[in-house]
Image (cartoon, rainbow, N blue to C red):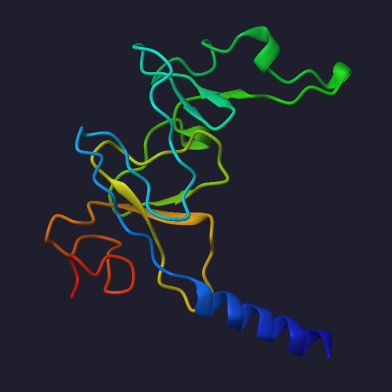
Length: 151
């Protein structure tokens, strides 16, 4: 019975899933699609940025921009709130490559947006970086996630 209920829940989730709508920020900045956590404005002119409560260092800084109170300290139960540029990858995610949004500070390269996959059962935190909205059906784009480019 539980297996059948789980199957119905997954079907309902798949039916409710809608592909992201790429948004052009107009200034060359990264503009995630629907369902993607917002990338906040750069925290300063040094290329640092924030994602919600997290500070992300600029490219090449690794975690040197992190104040001591933003680094993990198990002795007091503090978790990290500052991470390297690009998350685990250490760089932006290029066109056609997948990005795991649970990876704090991960981001698409400039000019790209995050679009969801076209799986029957969506993976809500996995996105593909693409140039959705340029009139060309490029890597990772399909009718289901970028209808503007892939009719």
